[in-house]
Length: 379
Picture 1 (cartoon, helix red, strand yellow):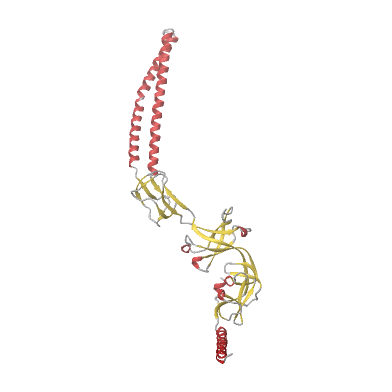
Picture 2 (spheres, rainbow, N blue to C red; picture 1 turned 120 degrees about the vertical axis):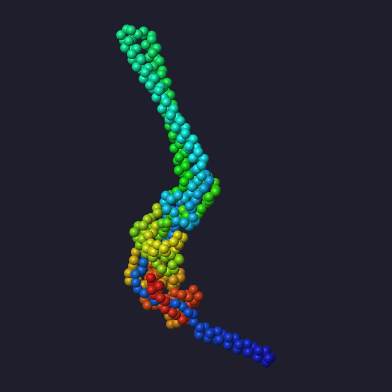
């Protein structure tokens, strides 16, 4: 091989070896910053995971039983309403006119009914005359044919008067019932709040025509409902009165104590999840509709067991900080809580597990560790 070629190969090999040595030395010199937390001994919680949602206890669709033009509205988007408060007034002009006409007809019928008193007086007089003729007939001083005729006349007068009276009474009652229905329609044209709540949406405004039973507004109840969705395989053993811990996404890792107050029978047909209702101990101004999060419903507690922060676990493995290196180790996990998990095998008390930066690590990688805030990890 010519000397120039041999010289170039030798120079290249030297450069490659130098580069590898430089990279190796750089890797040995650099370290990955991680946060670690010790394996501690404490009480493990056998908890069932659940998905939390905070919603209004009820959503009321406001509508009227009557149609008409909106002439007055007290609806304000986002405004609070009290039960029984007038929210919307529909125009009742036509109904008022109809009511006045019916009232006039009722008064007229009533006066006509009072005039029938004269006919009753005439009937009484006819009865008195007939009684007198009956006495004469009994004494033999009144013809039999004549008394029979008088009897038929009295019966006909009596029946005609009774029939007329019944007709007049029925017509008067019909008019009164019509007036009641009109007055009820007028009353229903004033739409009141069926319950206290917050106006969420408004569908009709002053000047608009609305049909009967058309949506006018949506009112969300002020009271809130905290529901927890539990998978079917985890639902066994869940009971009213069991404790729970809730973590709402809006408030980070902070945990709130809660209690199961109700079980909703039957699972959702689509997700096969069961729903329980929780009462959560939280300041009212922190509990807002639309919040979501997760919960651990506590079925059992196990004392004197090894615990690590939940965030140190990925799959069935953890990274242990040992001699300034990240050592990958498989573990056997027991009970799982929101912030901590029980370790049955694979770790010893006092060992440091990596809780931050583990996703970028490789087994054996050099690390620089910082101790975590234990109060936060084991809250």
